[in-house]
Amino acid sequence: MRRLACLVASLPFTASPALAQSERTAAILAEAERQCQEIDAGGLTVEPGAITQADLDGDGAADDEVVNFAGIFCQWNMSHWHGTGGAPIHFVIDGQRSESWWANSWARVQFDDMPVILLSRHGSLCDNYGASPCVQAIVPTENGFQVVEDTRSEEATLRGASE
Ligand SMILES: [Ca+2]
Image (cartoon, rainbow, N blue to C red; front, side):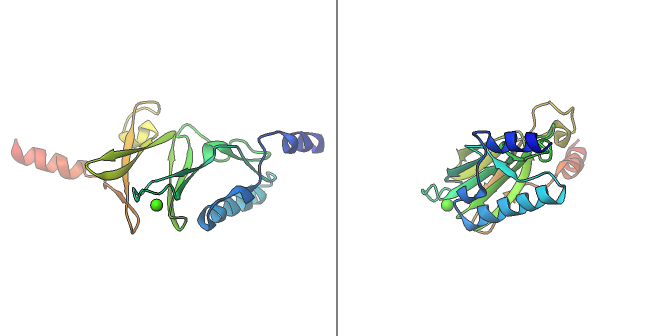
């Protein structure tokens, strides 16, 4: 086991959480590292590209960060943050506030003058089988993230009233 640990530790993609750009991102990685230790799974492995700079809130500066756990692992437990629903993706605005969602992938688009984050999520969240297409839109704002609440029952009521 010790030999395996040395092998894993020496793989080229192994990186240090010290690569974090902002305090908030550093805190996310520190918490992840703590979780790895808690489950006795060694240190934290951060692949190149797991942390990217982006302009999420549309202020024109790429001073936001995306911490994508698709590229972050516990050294001895590669599945800790990885499942059929993807992995947690943390969106860090201005290095200060963040929220995370489990998703397979993300994209930043512009829609009606709004910066929008799109997430490809597990199909069960769209009340369908796991691999079915399921997309969620999130708007980063000054105070947080705007997400539509589940309005399906409300819409069914409205539909029923108009029939
Ligand atoms: Ca920003």
